Amino acid sequence: MIDAYEDPGTPDHRGGARYLWWLVARQPWRCAAGAMFGSVWMVLLAATPYLMSRAIDDGLEPGDMGALAVWSAALFAVGAFNSWLSIMRHRTMTRVRMDANFRTVKVVVAQAVRLGSSLSRQMGAGEVVTIGVGDVQTISQSLTVVGPGVGAVVAYLVVAVLLVSVSELIAAVVLLGIPVIVLLVGPLLGRLQGSETEYRERQGVLTARIGDLAGGLRVLAGLGGKGLVADAFRGDSQRLREQGYRVGAVTSWVQALGMGLPALFLAVVTWLAARLAAQGDITVGQLVSVYGYVAVLVGPVSFWVECGYQLSRGVVCARRVVGFLRLEPMPDTGTREAPAEPSVLHDPESGVRILPGRLTALVAEHPADATAVVDRLGRYAPSNATWGDTRLDEIALNQLRTHIVVADHEADLFAGPLQDMLAPSFRGAGPCRYAAPPRGATSHNPPAHATQHNPALQKALHTAAAEDIIQSLPHGLDTPMDAQARNLSGGQRQRIRLARALLANPHILLTVEPTSALDAHTEAKVAARLREARQGRTTVVTTTSPLVLDHTDTVHYLKDGKVAASGPHHELLDTTPGYRALVARDTEEVLG
Image (cartoon, rainbow, N blue to C red; front, top):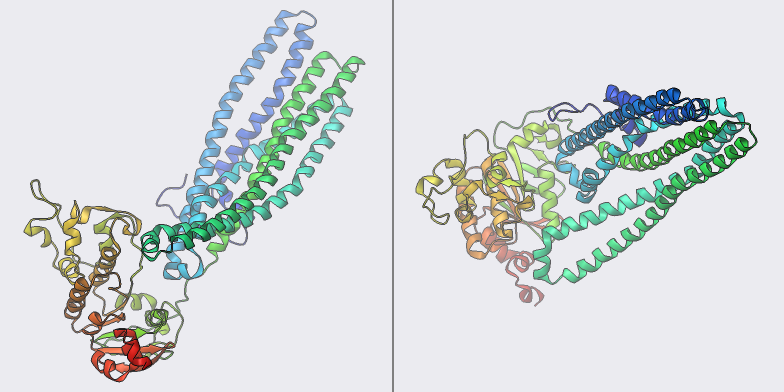
C-alpha cells in the first residue's frame, strides 16, 4: 500500500476510464494477486457441485461407503481451502481499494497545492469537498472489478466446460443465457452514468452552500438573512433529492435485475435438467451437479452486474477527478529578478500608483474594484501591472511572492494550534510561541516572560491588537483552533490574519479590508500601530474607514474601477464630494 511520503506517480488524466486503469497499473502485482485469488476461489466454488455429483454417483447410489468417504473428504478439503482463499481475496482487494483511495487523495491534494490561489477562481469549495469525500471512495470501490470481476469470467468459462461434459443442450442454454442477462442490464448502466453525473454536480453545489452557511451563519443572523438563505438551501436540497430519486430508480432496477434474472435463469435450467434426468439422459448425480453449477453461476453474474454498477459510478467520479487534475495554475513565465531598489507599483488598468515606503489606501465605490486592483498588483489576476520598469508577469513568481504579500480579510485559517496558524508566514526567527500559563497562573494574567519568547511575534500581535486574544485562550498559542478559527469571533479572526501577514514582514504588504470587523476603539489602535510598524515599507489597505484613512499618506479614490482622485485623506474630504459621501456618509450635502 502507498506510503504517506511516497510519490503517488503522474496520473493519467485523459479520461475517467484511463484514470481507473492508472490506479490498477500502479499496483500490478497486488491486482494480479487479487484476480488470482478471486479466480481460484470462484472456480473451486464451481468444483463443489462436481465433487457432490461424484459422491452421489460413485458412493451413495451404489452404496460404496469408501468412495463416499473419499469424495466427502475431498469436498471438506476444498471447502476449507476455499475459505482461506476467500480471506486472502478480501484482504488483497481491501489493500487494492485503500491504495487507490490514498493515491487519489494524494494526487488531489497535490493538485490543490499546485493550483494555490487560482483554485478558488476555477472550482468551488463544494466541488473540491465532494471530490475529496465522496468521489475518492467511489473510485476505490470500483476497483473491485480486478478481483471478483476477473474471477467471475474465469468461473463462467470453467462451468461452461463442465456443463458440456454433462449435456450439450444445457451448456448451450447456459452459454447463451448468461450474456443475454448481461445485455439486458447494460443499457441501464448507461442511464445510471448520466443520472449519477448530474447528481454529483448538484451535490457539489449543495456542499458549497453548506460551507457558506457554516462560515456565515452569525452574519446572516445579524442581517436577518437566514430565511432567504434557508429558502435557497431548501430549493437546492429538494432538487438534489429529486435527482437522487432518479439515480435510485435506475440503481434499483440494476440491482433487481442483477439478482432476479439469474434466479429466474436458475429455475429454467433446473427444470430442463430435471426433464433430462427423468428421461434418463443424465444421472441423478449429474442433475445435482447441474443445479450446483447454475447456482454457482448466479454469483459470477451478480458480480458482473455489481462490477458494472460500481465501474459505471467509478468512471463518473474519475471524470470529476480528471477534470480537477486538468486545471492549470496561473502560468509562471517570468524569469527576471525583483527590483533591487524600492520601486513604484503601477496598475495601468485603474491608474493606481503605489509609491514605495508609504501607507496607501484604496477607497472604491464598489469594494470589488479595490480588491481587483490588489489582485492585479499581487499578480493573482492577469494584468499589465508593473513594478518599477518591469512587468509583474516577467518576474519569477517565487521572487514576487517573497517580496509582495496579499492579506485577504477572508484568507483561510487551517485547523490546529493557533501557533500553527501564525507560524507558516514566519521566517527564520526560531520558536515563536506564548508560553502556556504555569500552574497557579490564569490565562487572563499570563506571566511576563510569556510574551517575550519572540520579539517579532510580539510585535506582530501588538500591531494587530491581538495580544488580548492570546491572553484569553486557556493554552495561549497552543490552544486548538477549529477550521477557519470558528471558535474565535469575526474580529478576532481578522486580527489573527493581520498578525500572520505582518509576521511575514514583506517589502510590500497589500491588505484587503484589514479592520472591517473591528470595533472603533480597536480599529483606531490597529491603524495607528500599522503605520508605525510598517514605517519605511510599502503598505496598501483597501478601506472606507475614516479611522484608518486618517493615518495614511496617500488615498486613491476609485470610481468605476478607475482613479478619480488622489491625495491625502483630509484634502479629498474637502475637494471630492463623492469621496466625502462614501467615507463620511455625508450624502445630504452631496445631494444638496
